[in-house]
Image 1 (cartoon, one colour):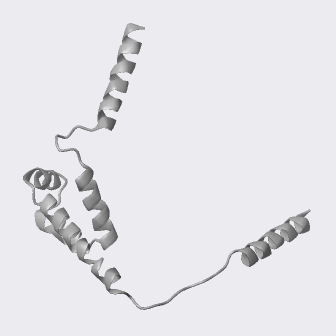
Image 2: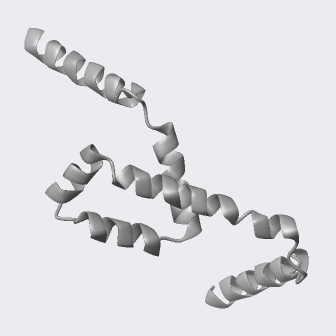
Length: 118
C-alpha cells in the first residue's frame, strides 16, 4: 500500500517536471523600467505628507510613535510597501464615510432591534 502511494507520487512529480518548463531570462534594463522608479519617490512623499497631518500625528503620538520615528519608518519601507500605502491613502473617503462602516452599522442596529423586539 505504501509503495503504491510512493510510486504514484513519484509519477506525478515526473509528469509535473516534464510538463512545467523552467525558464529564466536575463537582459538589460531599459530606460522605461528605470524611470518607473521615479513615481516611487512621489508615493513616498505622499506618505510622508500624510504622516505630517495634525490628526495623523496626534493618533501616532497616542500610539507611542514620535513624528521623527514615523518619518524614519516611512524611509525604511520598500517601494512596493510605499506604493501600497499611497494607494490606500488615495482610496480613503474624504469625509470619513465608508460603505463598509455603514453596512456594519446597519447590521448591528438591525441585530439589536431584532433581539430587542423579540
